[in-house]
Amino acid sequence: MKTLTINYLSHERLDSHKYWNITSHFINKIKFKDRIKVNLLLSHDNNFENYLDPNIEVEKFICNSYMEKIIIASKSKTNFSMKLDEDVFFSNFVFDKFIELSLNPNANGIYWPIISINTAMTDLFIEKFIKEPVIVKNIHKSFLKVKFPRNLWKQKNAYLKLNFLTLFAKEWNSKKFNIQVNKTNSVYKGIHPIRLSYKSEILLNQYVIANLSRVFDDNNFKLVEFKDIYMTSNIYMMKTEHFRKYLKYEPYDIFDEVQLNDYIVNERIQNFYIDNAYAVHTMFSTVKGHNKLLNNNINRREAELEELYLVNKVNEYLNI
Image (tube, rainbow, N blue to C red):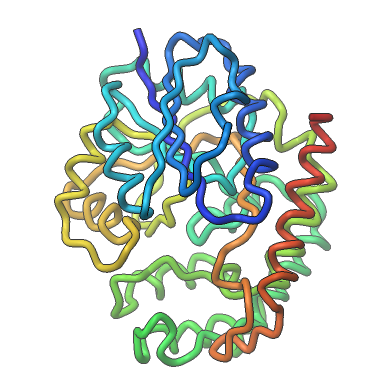
């Protein structure tokens, strides 16, 4: 019996087949293929279904918007569903752990890997994954150079106080930062220095590239509950009924991030990360292209090529 639908969201990314080449490689190595179905939720038609083992059930949808993809995910027939954006990679061992969780009818929470570039997870990833203090120090120094500008995402002065924890701080303190984020007068609490810093993301990705074997190891996985954290939602698994329920919440934009977080808070949904289950997120779209508010002089093409460099390195490492 199938227990988990993997909803793979592919958008307008440069050389998107190279991203799917990685994820399909790991899906094909899943132990219990009879437990899964894959929904390909695509912005353009392609032959992604041909990348998968013929024993894996797959259905393809060509969608006009991000939210159309989420609505399709909410209609999955399996008890559990995963949302997986194309720019996130993790091993077949992590997929196997998610499938194991989907066999438990009492698994009522939301389950996440530890994501490299992510507003809620980056500090945890750095703490758990990076072994060298000098690397940690350099990344933290890059955080302290980040300015949170007025009217970011049209939120007026909402983020200005965060500058006291970056520009006017002597050292990075993630706990103090998260406390201040929770006080922010905005529904958009998916904020962290790494979301606004191209340099920080490059520094972290360079370390990831040098340590891919550890990213994709079969590690000792265990569940750890975490609370009071606003999640940016590019990869997670939960019961499919949660998708249907959170979509009833008021939408704030063309994405589902705020709806999901409102649902988590109001319905007191438990969140768990899978310790030692590492996931690589390539880059936030926030840092791609010139942005006067962020004083970002990186053009979009340069950022996309840098992102693709990471993807190519993963493909090379996997020899696929």
